[in-house]
Structure formats: C-alpha cells, structure tokens
Image (cartoon, rainbow, N blue to C red; front, side, top):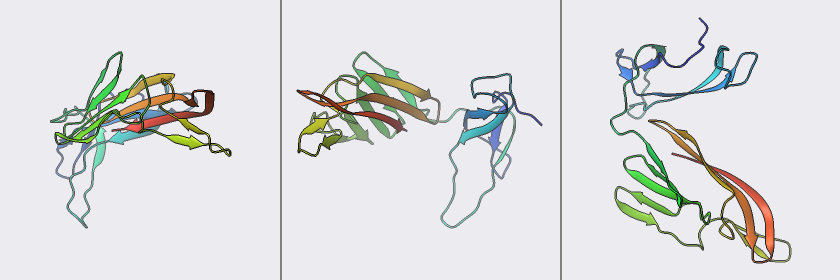
Length: 174
C-alpha cells in the first residue's frame, strides 16, 4: 500500500493499544517531502516506548486515530525568544544573544540561568575570541512543534567588537 498522508496513521503497542505518536515525512518518491500528492518514501516516527531493561517489545504501524499524549510538548514564541515546555523540562532560547539556553529548568529546579558568558566560543589562530553571544542571532526558527517533539533552529555569526568570524547553525531537539 502506498502512503500519501500521515493523517490516519497510528502506532500500536504489542497489546494492540494506540500509542501517542508524531509523524514527519522526510522524503517522498520522485519528489520533495512537501509534495503532498506523492507517496511517502521515508517517515520519521516518534513515540514513547515503555520498556523494562533487557526486554523486547513490538510496535506496529497501522491505520487509526493517534491519541494525544498526557503532557504534550508546548512551544511559545515571543519577541525575545522561544520557550519550550516538555513537562519536566522547560528551556528558553534567546533571540537577542545566542547563549545556547537562556534558561533551563528540570522538575522546577533551575539548571541554567541567563549569562552572556554561556554559549559557543571560537578562538582564531591569534587567540582572538569570538562568541555566539557577540551579536543577536540572524534567525531563530521553530522547525517543529508537535505533541511529542520540538525542533528549534538558530542561525547566526560568532562575533566580537571588531566583526564576525564563523557562521553557526544549531538545532535544538526536545
């Protein structure tokens, strides 16, 4: 069978129970992933697998209604940045200075706070330092914001007061 759309796909566990899932078409036969009239060639499927250590469990892909997760991933964009909340994990990515994570909380415990000293640092052959926080990122994009997975893409330049040195493109998956 040819799969054209992921709308009616569902993942089932070994008991036949539907599992919360997220689907992303990566490639289609004879075309691009965004050409929705063409059959799916490669499909990324994300779902929570409940396994005990050193055990096996079979899951199958079929047709059905995918249930919503108990705690869906939430993504909120503001003028200052992007906030992601997975339930236990919350983090923000700044649009004004890319310090990787502007803040990180795990189970309400702060692990990272905003600091321009965070982020990526590059030193050239003369020892000159360029930082990802040297200037605002060019783009902060939400590439995916699904119920089980989110992807934030950040693009910019490492910089210092004298100029730019090296481009970065970072994807943060949650």
